[in-house]
Image (cartoon, rainbow, N blue to C red; front, top):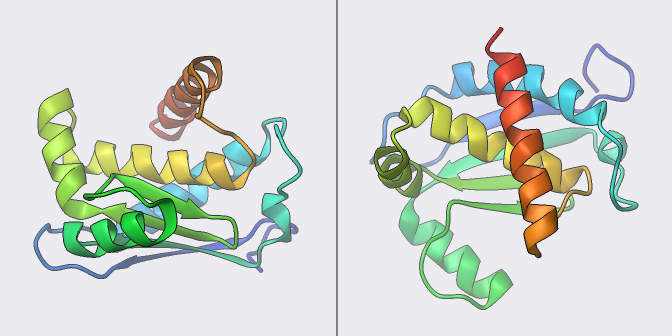
Length: 148
């Protein structure tokens, strides 16, 4: 457990080689974003505080496509996949591509994916338009608060 009672430890690991990633800086960011997520009211029974550790794993498009196919029965890579037992997989290559498309820095895009994954672990969902809009608004608020 982390120093703060009830807050899981966050461990960020870069498991790919194609995109330069500062895992230590992302881990620092995630440690700031996590308490902000925990302040939000949960939307389902998943309890983020029951996790001892959260692993954020930056992987290749190839590995992400394999996970996407295996667990979601969808083809091709995606940006982020979150598993309820505390794993957040992020595609570094997809983050780099989408950062360019949306005019974000790579760091900002990776931070967005971390917050997105943390919110999923906390019970937020984006399967319908209303929930997706709410989640996007909350993501932006957390990103803004962590930049102060």
